[in-house]
Image (cartoon, rainbow, N blue to C red; front, side, top):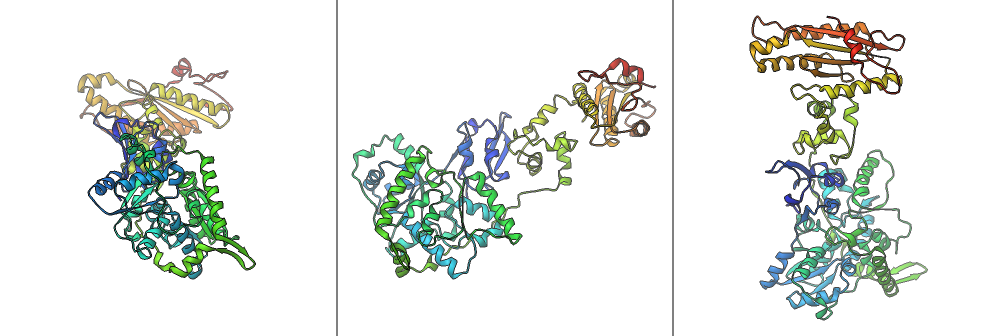
Length: 586
């Protein structure tokens, strides 16, 4: 499973939209380029080739690889290559049969319609469901869904339909019934089909994934006018209504021709499909009912708007073409009788094929995605300057995750950097550069927040401690600024060790520190102050004989009394420096 999707580094703006739309947290990995700018790479091991990031990227920084160039190179070298075209080709190429004429002129062999493979897959689903007594199964024409289950939710593998996709079903049919020899190329709307093609569980029946978009780019780059070529139609047996597979609900349409009452859940799009898989799994664990058949697709709008298309087709035009063809097929092959619906193509399969020939196995490729417990993330949170529960639940979308915890997980995994957190970047403006504490501006903001909570009765009282290092100038003069800096860091560490996450502390300036204690009585504040002072004394960071003592002043505000207040009550809460200075006790 090599990297289908990749980042064009010079175009990447690290806007994090790719992270926001990806169903897999570890698939997008932030790093610093040579110029120190942040970029987001694709983690090949984790990526399920869903293509959501390509569509979301406004900067054209995501692209993908397919087999288009290799297909044409091998064709030019004389390889025998046949083509099978996805049903969605008929709505993505207005002159599809002239496109076939051009491909035939280059040496392509027979061209077949994968719609027939979809008919086979539907028939085989129903046969397997009955023969294996399956109460519920998840349809798997979409390889991104298979990738996700194999890597991230292997508990669902027994629920995946034990039948190959329409593409592989057609390839098996062509080999067994039509005795087709040579390589097979797939004209494809899907990036992830390359994963399916290379999977040993599919028998490697197909050799090339040629996507619509890359083929259109080639036509444009080489200025090929396909309207100059004759029309060439499909070879082989005519399909039933399997072409409707290319739209959401298409599988349901084919199943309900003969099974009108089956409970089928229909989902499409990255946003809803992957969360539903987890919901389905949870319902199974809780022994709750689940649908008989889950028709689930990665792409919004189905394969007609797949990851390997240019997304330029109008939805109503798609449905109009599909519906017109469906009416013709039903008129040809469906007969209503007293004993039920007779569907000619399924009768043909029953007489000609064995459903077991189309069975599919899956491989558990589980990836441990690094979901750590809260205590494992403590060091990361501290690094992010997220000291309080509130700061760890901001859950903005600037980083792409929408969750502080998920972002912390990514940082711990080494696939993101702390600077990608906007609150961390902002807090850098509010934090002291020498210590892990707030700076003067940060303290003013914190004090205002505490006061606001005090005013709206969320806090019963607030105590503020002011602390300075005695004769600190002499420390710097006698021992140097490096020693003085170490002394200030020791004071900061002592403060952090004696306050809780609901409190705040910072460097007011120079050797002065402020500590804000919420819902802490004056007597308890005195105890904390004394513990900090003792801890500072024991820090022992200065050379022997040096004086390292501190002074602490305490002011308190509480509801029943406000002596020595540091607060002004009015339209806006402000720090009253003059009153506070009077409150300090040496």
